Length: 422
Ligand SMILES: [Zn+2]
Image (cartoon, rainbow, N blue to C red; front, side, top):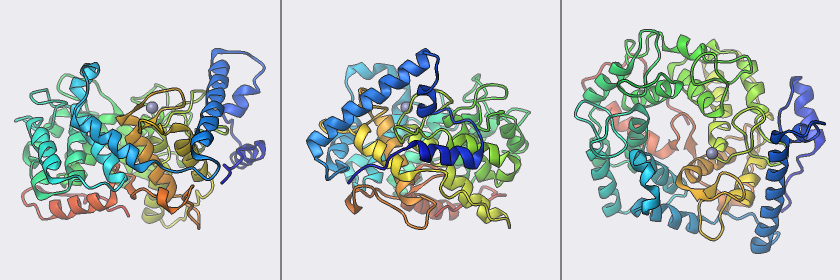
């Protein structure tokens, strides 16, 4: 199987149809000025050519093949314990658990009972008595690690896992982070950030504790983070960024307020983040490709497409502005570590649980939400990963289990039901 050619004509086609300036590799390299940005881009393209040659040496020309079992072994190893080198990540242990569990679910690997029990016990120890979850047992509750813990428990999917979440204190914790202008701080005494809004919205809608008080004024604050480029920033008046754009768009979708944003500008900015040479996404204008944006950027297309076409009479047509085959080639051919397992940011980097989780989630988006009539799984059906819910970044099957469980839980008024994504 030959990779698609990301030719100048393809780039020109996008350029012509949207009439905006592409800031990706082909155009950066054609810049007459030799800047650090151009040099780094050239080095990345060189590393991609080297990685492609190495890949073909191992898999031949029949690939690309997802080395599923090697990735499963990599994630299980990370889940069972990390070396002392990872001590700096002590405050992110709930995140590591989420990345590994979600990665295993995407690879359709069953999590055996004793391991699931250990995970649930560990996450229960990370829950604060005043609501929310910290990064490790007895750490201060933080809205990002709360998102990680809740999504990890949902991805375990058993009643034992889901009942760990104390919805009453969770509601109080989220409300305590709310600011008068509708934004959220990340933790008590912490910074305001659009990630806080998304994590609060995702957790509250999944566990069905949303009410009008919790997010009053929040959609307008999120809109104030959309920049002149079209993407969203961490807070008003700073630079648009892929991760923050995902947070802004997914939060607005959960609130049912996507039409408040400038959709045209957003979609143009998102489309131009897919790199013409590598096929993966960059997170900001003039930056390098990075596998984690395979989810942060690519998931925005199906969210906007699905939610808008369900909310509005008008039919939006975004087909073709995202190149799902190119993204799959980037992940399979250039980002898999074939020997040790795991997905890396880009060639010549080391794989880690974070990029493995978001790389596989991006692969799922590219396989299941191509927005074309015919979906293509690059490399053949055996490369298919489970279908991700792009609003929450958990596998659809586990989103549905959590939805059904929390639907039966009494006691919290729900003004806006969670969005049931396919
Ligand atoms: Zn990354």
